[in-house]
Image (cartoon, rainbow, N blue to C red):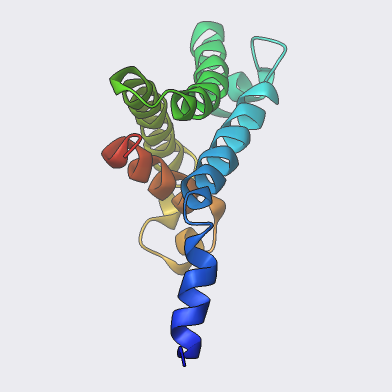
Length: 135
């Protein structure tokens, strides 16, 4: 008779392919909406809060939106190009999150507040796709 652990593993192994898609869609949709929320361009909140130029504020909005789209689109291409698209989108996410943490949340670094926020998880999942690509 199979142990409970083996039965549980056999059941969930059928869904293992979904795990990357759950992360990919979650992060991709999140970044799409983070960027989309800054439209129409230029996003006045970024200009006012950070003192960004109109061009830089617009670039950030477009970069966030396109990073999410690229991350999702990259997953549908199982060749080297899909992995490259995934990594490019993930690289944009990682860069954006490093700047977000450095500019907007500088006081959070290595504190419980950082690890209780969504920002650290956006960065970590971005790093996951940057390193892993479509593997």
